[in-house]
Image 1 (cartoon, rainbow, N blue to C red):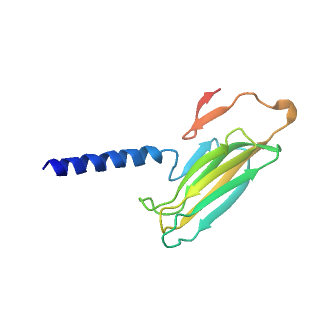
Image 2: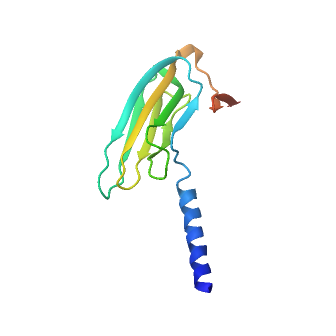
Image 3: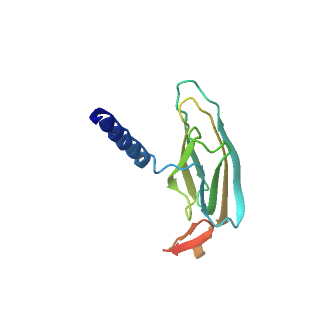
Length: 142
């Protein structure tokens, strides 16, 4: 009985550690208020490879021409434990660039649609604050 409880405790601890390790990753990712011009709509697809975790680093840069007002990364795979995940690694809302890391589960494919909206960044009207949106509503202006 003691051995079974020890194993149960160890498994619970491992699951909690794995959950906190992957907390930066999301099934799908949306930030901002999707207004302005749609700058990008692109499919990111990688086929499965046996016994391999697929990684894709995505990068987009407007070179100062646009500021990102919204980006949406939609996972087109069924929502389950085998689906790929995405995380923001740089830039994003209010910036002129976006960096993402997409990672599949072992031996699984990934299928995402990426959309980026932005507004022209005129040098005279550059804002020194950022507006952060959560679920389409403004969370703060900081």
